[in-house]
Amino acid sequence: MVVVTTMVVLMVAVVVIVVVMVAAEVVIMMEVMVVMVSVILVVMVVAMQIVVIERW
Image (cartoon, rainbow, N blue to C red; front, side):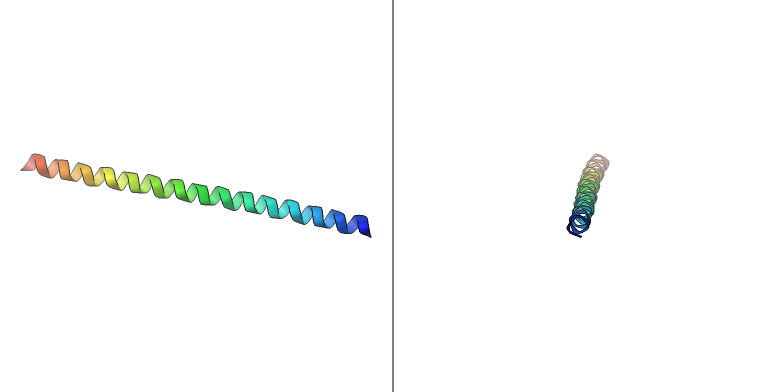
C-alpha cells in the first residue's frame, strides 16, 4: 500500500510540474505576444506621425 501511495504521489507531482511548466510557457507566450503587439502599435503610430509630418 505504501508503494502504491508513493507512486500516486509521484505521478501527481509530475502532473502538477508539467501543468505549471505549460502554464509558464503560455504566460511567456502571452507576454511575448503583448510585447510584439505593443511594438507593432508603436511603430505604426510613429509611421503615421512621420507620414503626417511629411504631408505637412
